[in-house]
Length: 78
Image 1 (cartoon, rainbow, N blue to C red):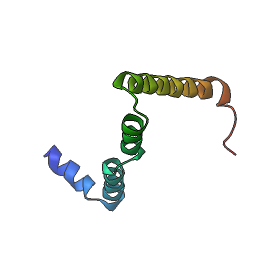
Image 2: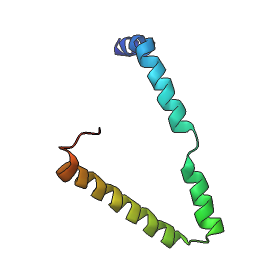
Image 3: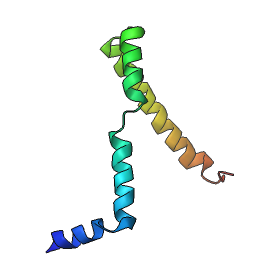
Image 4: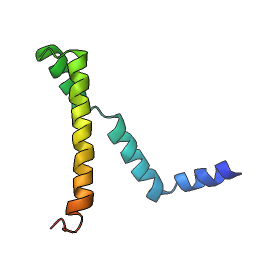
């Protein structure tokens, strides 16, 4: 019974079209594949170096989120 209710909502264009768009965006290849090839085959980074680069990038992401949360929240995007 609940599955029929969920299916009836998924068939609505207001729900179905954004879901299809999100699916297409998620399955499309991104720049990550090209950058991995470039970093590993052209620049000859080892797996350890690629791991360190990833960790530094994630730390930068966390730092940027916290910087926005504590210092930039009161400013508008305009």
